[in-house]
Every structure is written in C-alpha cells, then in structure tokens.
Figure 1: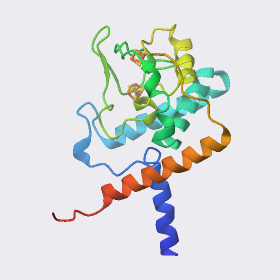
Figure 2: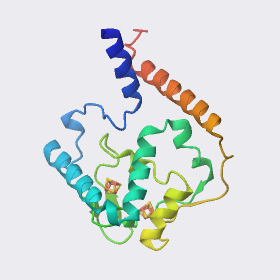
Figure 3: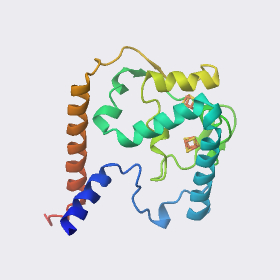
Figure 4: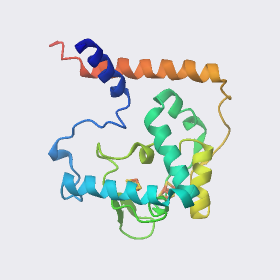
Length: 188
Ligand code: SF4
Ligand code: SF4
C-alpha cells in the first residue's frame, strides 16, 4: 500500500507544474507581500478567466496553453522551440488581455515585467509561451499581432503512435531527472 502510494506520488511529481513544490518564504519576490496575497490573486485571476470562458476564445487559448504546459513532458512541450524566432520586447500586452494580471509591473513603454516570472511561483503557461504556432496565433488575435515572436518552419507531424511513444519517453526522462535531483548527496 505504501509502495503504491509512493508510486502515485512519483507520477504526480512529474507534473511539478500542476502540483507545485513547497516554496520557502524567502523565495517570495519583493513585489509580493505575502503568500496569502499571492495565492488569493492567483485564485481571483483564474476565477475571472473561468467566468469569461463561455464568451471568449482567449480563455480557450489560455486553458489550452495551461493544460499543454503542465501536462506535456518537456520533449513534447518544446517541440516547436527550434523553430521559434524573435524576442520578447516587454510590451506587456499578453499580460493585459481581458484584465491586467495582478503580477504585472508596468514601468513605462516596453519596460514591463512580471513580478513572479523568475520565482518558483511563475505559471508554466507564462514560462513556456509560445508553445506552438496555434498558441501564438490565438494570442496575436487578441493583441493585433503585436507580439514579436514568430515561427519559421515546423517539426514533423506526429502520428498518434509516435505521440504516445514520445509522451511515455518524456515522462520517463522527467522521472529519472527528478529522481537524480532528489537523490541524497553521495558525499563525494
Ligand atoms: S506580447 Fe509578446 S512581445 Fe509582448 S510582452 Fe508578451 S511575449 Fe513579450
Ligand atoms: S507573465 Fe506574469 S504578469 Fe504576465 S500573465 Fe503571467 S503571471 Fe501575469
């Protein structure tokens, strides 16, 4: 039973993005007054998004990105990265669709930043944007094509079998990496 539980925990552990690791108080960014405030803001932002979902293609796009960023192993989530071009110009438009994200900091034109981006609390959906051309297209639709990322080329199309094979490999690789990270120091 306890082994079963451990196995279950390992599987969940792959999706670190969904079930975040406990984070020390000292890792809170200075713009974030407390964890309670941060989680409350996250909850409110998600609730606002969900409440708009019946009327918004953007919510579908955000939900799609969240699901893919959290549930795809890295080998699949990063398939399009080799074809991604351009750099973020810090316009901040992607953080102000529908409503302004509570973690968005505006210090002038093209001088914006995310207060939690470099912290362990940053949403994977934000860290991994853009995931693929459809992800970028759905965002560009909302901000008048102002985002400076673009794609040149695309990876080979995957069959269902290849997808499942890569998914399994990716999950195994992530489990192995995590196991290595968690292994106690050998003392060398
Ligand atoms: S819209 Fe694109 S360029 Fe502008 S801040 Fe977001 S990712 Fe960067
Ligand atoms: S990058 Fe930061 S500020 Fe922008 S939407 Fe994501 S959490 Fe909010």
